Image 1 (cartoon, rainbow, N blue to C red):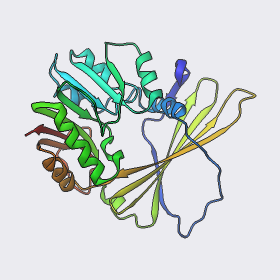
Image 2 (image 1 turned 90 degrees about the horizontal axis):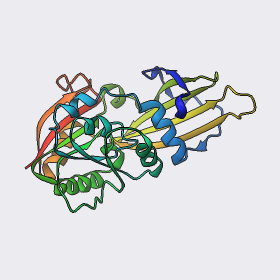
Image 3 (image 1 turned 45 degrees about the vertical axis):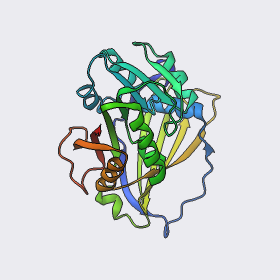
Length: 279
């Protein structure tokens, strides 16, 4: 949490058996919508120390080159990449995320509020990166294709596009009407805790991701809160992503499965790293 109140948290979501919500009905629960301010707070809580994907980008970005990050959040990647000598620009639509990014110490980074599907730059970049499933959040084939088309115009000839994409694995593809349930617990110094619950379901190349946050303060007089939001992600196969990239004028040079950057295996891996080049 902000101000150093967070002391420890689980590093991975805990898996629970898939549940069939057509036959099993839970009691009705009431969750308030998750505001942008709270979303920025929880994003920092979960992601501020996450660096498993950083080596992929560091190894492919030259010092002094110009880099644009689409969906930069609170600057988790911008800061260490800028510290390596690259000139970083990060864009995001969430003003709370950008506010938090600008408050953090570190090397100079230019943060702008901008839609990644309609970028407005007069300059070109050596590298564009779209990390941590951000491109999946555009949801539809048409919006993703448009974003990739626009991204190509921002790159110098031969410029790099670095991606992390979500790919449905065999577990997700065979869910049927069931949902995968996971939870994560964040402990706070005052004895309170935040419990994050995630429910995933899959249908027609779409991942439905419901994130619930149960805030249980440790200080007397503070009320419990139950907040949630739902995300829809494109869940395409690797060949379909290759087709999208090729149609946008990119050539895939390298691709890997997982944070250890091992060879990608369809059906096993749900994380795909891609290095593409403007043709």
